[in-house]
Length: 361
Image (tube, rainbow, N blue to C red; front, side, top):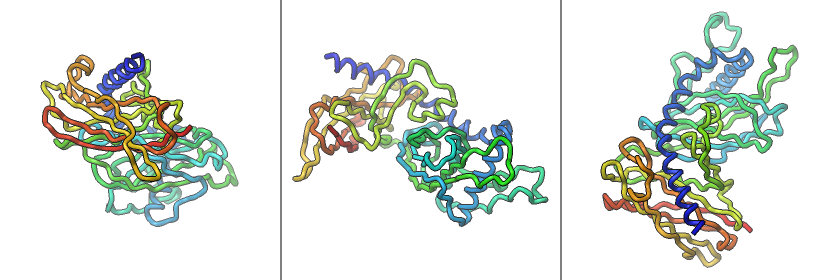
């Protein structure tokens, strides 16, 4: 009984936290839109690094080889419905921290719509025609996402950030550069840099059809006692709405002594005065040498007026959250697939999706 009550508490807490999700998206967009103005207030050191990162990305887009001083690897991302027809995309990469002389770096994230023309390289410093004006990127070139941040790369190299994009196909350019010294030095060696290009297809969650966000397999999900500051939120994109802290499971692997937690958001549900009536069934299947076989299932999750927090209203932008927490002590080590079947009782529509995970001893 204690386990069941804990599960219900977490579901209700998480659902309540989603009230703030709609406010997260415009904040993130505003941060990106104000990035150029922020550069004017940055130190000369950061302004030099910003210009170098943008010029580096322009040069690679124009055909020059990408730098390989510092390796960058894509870990993964998730898609969640954002505000104003956009999609919120938290993502993680690993940066080869051992190749950096110090943890401090500039991180540049640019999104380029597929089939967009490559810009001409930005003018280099020293061009007389360009003195006295900003040469950080070619004039009249805008990108769906274009953001520079400064941070310390942790020892394990994992860095998580987020961006906002409209549905469609994009190439992401992610570049890092070691921070320049406070004052330029004579005979200074070239700064170590690295770049990653990654293609993504952003789904559209704005239609009337029943759809679901990327399912997130989480090692832990907890409400925060206090909202994060904008800078803390920027550095912790899996803290949804600044109040719900999600720790994605590394490689989808869990210990038998731990707990599987799965969450996702359901879109396009019908509602009665803002209140939905949704049922979600969870079925577990184990992968064996002979093939996949049914393993177990849980009691359905019911999302309606009797389980939602007071004031929940789809018309106010609140989102329907599917949430499951299961202890793994009865799971033998191996690979599993959890199938979740979503039934919108008001419309009669049904949707099935899956997530795979591994249990280790």
